[in-house]
Image (cartoon, rainbow over the protein chains, first blue to last red):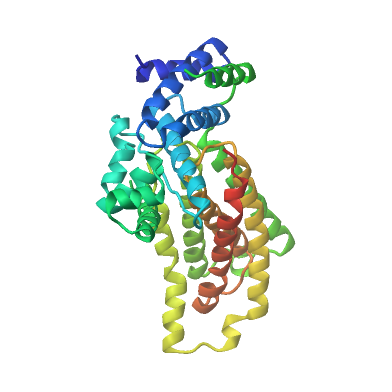
Length: 174
Length: 213
């Protein structure tokens, strides 16, 4: 079972004050939450690294959490930033720079709906979402994704490029 | 939980120190103090424009000051809110401030198209001085704001860079504004716009590299 919002918030406030026991509990709960958050959003083999990178960001940026606000929108914003950043790093091996823009709406209590990555995929053309899911999330090669979708290899690359750009723009406008 | 995650958590817990939460007000205070120092420095070294000294400043001075301050404050507020991800609604006020500020160069461009201004109206030498002084002030303001922002967690470093540049450029120009004696729209449209644009480009190019995650 994963802790609820109030528990996360309480643990984080204690952690900001230097309570190591609470901090340990908080990071363990964050690890569980992030693992579930990233499931089916990135190649399963990459989840461990991504969760750990996100935990390091949580640690480094813990002063940026406002104790008067909900904790999960903060965690989700960092998680989503790390997710896009990891996609960008993979993407940069093959292509030019991808710009990411992301802002979470703190007033929305329904964090998982608001920051849902599937929702972003649902907001771009189906052909682009399909190849991003296959290549960037499931870890298929361009050739495999081409065979599976019927799109040519160059079209797969173009659709990944365009889809990621659109997703970045959508994040900005959310 | 994997063994590596477990050892990472143990390491992070070991490093834990109490932290003071980041307050947007402190970021704004830094911007305000550096801007004030820039204004005082301009006044002390270059002097205050004469009409302002005698309390009869031209209306263009007030319009220009208001525009620059509004743009600078709106963008700086957005930047300091960006330091806390998921906290503080996405502020779009700076976009409207930018549109409003664009009225000055737009008006100058339209007027120039209708009635080509003489080169004297553009005052290249004075304009370069305006650009230099505004740029130095912008560098100080942008530097302070960037140092503060490094403590935060902006999830859009590129946008943060643009906004730091616009804010510092506008406030740097506002500092020089109290000295600048020129009121015609050609001069204002050109020489009070260039520092903001240059500063914004520098902010976009430099600031994202200084933000550490």
